[in-house]
Image 1 (cartoon, rainbow, N blue to C red):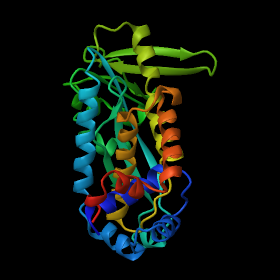
Image 2: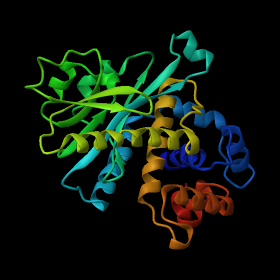
Image 3: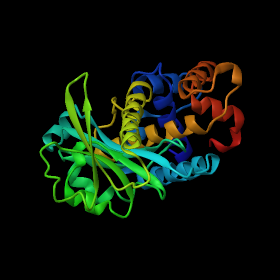
Length: 296
C-alpha cells in the first residue's frame, strides 16, 4: 500500500462523519473501483513510522503560522485530554487510556506539538515538555493540575498565567511571582492565579485565565467531529497514527478556504467537506479525480 493511499484512507475516516467503522469505508472503496484489502491497511498501521505523520503535522503548523502572522501578545492555553482504550489487547498490557497533552495558539489558530502518552500519568509528570510548547511572546495559561512552585520555576523563561491550589503557601513567593486572588460570587469559590506577566493588571490576568477554556473547546471538537474518541486500531503505533491524523485533519480545516456562501467558521468548513465527500464517495476518489496518475 503506497503512502498516499494509506494517508487518504485515514483522512477519509477522520473527516467523513457518516463513517462509523473502517469496514464501512473499505466496503465503499472495494465496491467503487478502489481495490484495497483491510488486512493490508491493518498491517501498515503496525509497521508505518508515525514520525512521517508527525512531520506532516509540524509542516502544517508552520504553514498556518505563515498564514496568520504572530501578534504582540498571544494567549496559549495548555491542557490534556484522555481517551479510553477499550481493546483487550491494550488491557492485557496494562494500558487503559492514552493521554494527549498540548496547547493551542488563539491568535494563529494552531495547536502546539503534542505529547502522546499511553497509560496513567498526572499532568505534572510532563512538566518538562510544557515550556517548549509556549511560543515566543506567548502567554501559557494552565489549570491547577500543573501547579507547583517547582513547575513555575521551570516556566520562568516564558510568560504564564497558572491557577494554583488554594492550599499552596504564597507568603514567601510574592517576590518571585505575582499571585492574584479572585472570588466567584456565584459558586462561592476562590481562585488564585500565579503570573510573571508584569504589564497586565489583576483584572486582565483574570480575563486571560478565562481563555484557558478554549483548549477544552479544541478537545471537544476533535472528539465530537473528528473521531478522536473512536480509536480504531489495537496497537500503539496505529493509535498514534490515528491521533496525528485527527490533528492533521484539524489543521487542514483551518487552512482550507471555502465559498463565502457556506460560512467561515471551522464547523462551516467541516460541514462543507461533508457535502463534497457525499459527491465523491471518499477522499481517495476525490483525489483520484484531481490527480489520477499519482494514485498508482
